[in-house]
Image 1 (cartoon, rainbow, N blue to C red):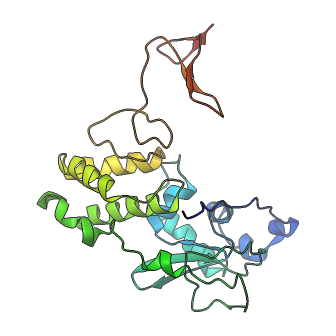
Image 2: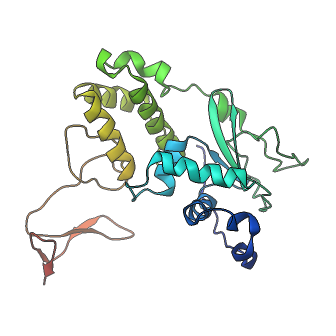
Length: 256
């Protein structure tokens, strides 16, 4: 079983405040740079899909538009802080002048052609098994499952964003069973509602999509969370959910 990659703790050095490269960027671009630091792997690389990056950097800020986010990436790249590159049909991003100590874990993202490759263990080798495995979640593989109304560029990009989200977050990649179920449910609603359902799932960090509603979801469960009138449901950090003795008002206030 493949180990789950965990980003190590990272710290900003004092020179960050006086960096001329960063000073030439807008405040939003500088914030984006800091947020990217929390995503990239030991080699400073990450998935370069702009829609995925936006949802990963600003998961709770729906007001952040893709066009604005792309401009911030442009600022960072023009000041030689990041590099965006493409290999085959896949987009990637890397932090320039990356010097983090490697932990002996291979990167699942291929190196940039402009990236210096040191010799020895941890040189940035890509896991061949990971990159050659069949992409059963690619649009080419799933397109026939959707009705003609969903055969649009907008929905194709949205599905690709969803598949990438499942692959590059704490959730597992989409299985054949999950693809069949989600394709059926998304195909039963309109084109726009299907796109909205995927956006809602990514913004809420859900494992599944619920185009016909379903409300909130238990984290990582893939199922909507239960509702119990008049009680608050909470989850212990190390155990199952429990129901507290608090009464919950319609405005969300509580009283013991």
